[in-house]
Length: 170
Image 1 (tube, one colour):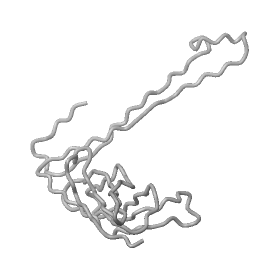
Image 2 (image 1 turned 90 degrees about the horizontal axis):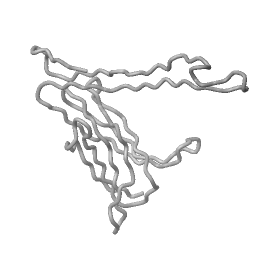
Image 3 (image 1 turned 30 degrees about the vertical axis):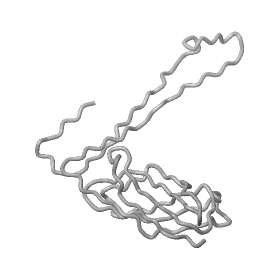
Image 4 (image 1 turned 45 degrees about the vertical axis):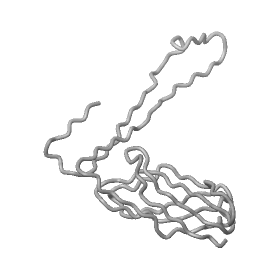
C-alpha cells in the first residue's frame, strides 16, 4: 500500500478502511485427501478477513476534549451486566479525532487509590462534537473520591485530554 498526499490537500483528517479477505478455494475430495470409499468425511473452508483503519492528518493538530456530566449508575434489575458504571459525555473540539481510553480510579475514604474501570477505543471523530461513554466498574463503591482520565492512544498517545476528580458520597 502506498499513500501519496496531493500537495494542495486541505488541512484536516481523512479516514478510510482497507479490507483484506482470503477466500477459501473450492476443493475436491481428492484435493482434501478424502477417500470416498472409506466413509463420510467433513471438510471446512474458512474465509478470513479483516479491515485496517487508515487515518491521514494534515495540518497543525488542534483537538481538545473534556469530560462532562459524569454520573455513577447502578444496573437495573433487568440488565444482563450487573456491574455499576460511570456514564459521561466527551466534548471534542478541533479538526481532528480524539483517540483514547477512559480510566477510572477510586480512592476510598482514608484508603489508597486503585483503578476500577477501563474503556479502550474511545474515539470521537470530527463528525461528532459530543459522545456518550459508559465505563463499567470492577466493583461497587461507597464513599470516597473518583478520578476519571481521558488519555490518548494510537496516534494520540501521550496526550491527556482531560482529568476530572470529584467526591462520591455513595
